[in-house]
Image (cartoon, rainbow, N blue to C red):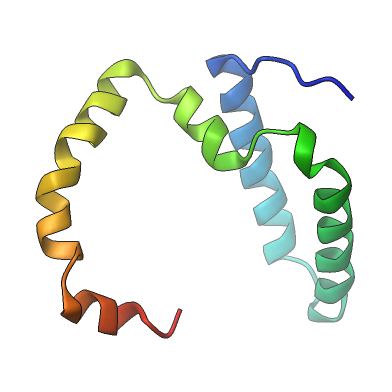
Length: 93
């Protein structure tokens, strides 16, 4: 299977599709969740090496200005996030 270059427009469409899938899963009866998870893991394993991740698509959909703001804010946010207190608060995840 060949991969295609994903344009920002296509990335936006994929993100919208992801949101629709999430909405459908949220309304799914509890007894079907394991079956859906199994199917998703099967599809992911079968196609993983050829497809971009949702995170990669979201980055492609960001404007240059959004990316620059993200890059510039990282050092200031790191001051708050990269602390022993934060590590302890999130270790259960």
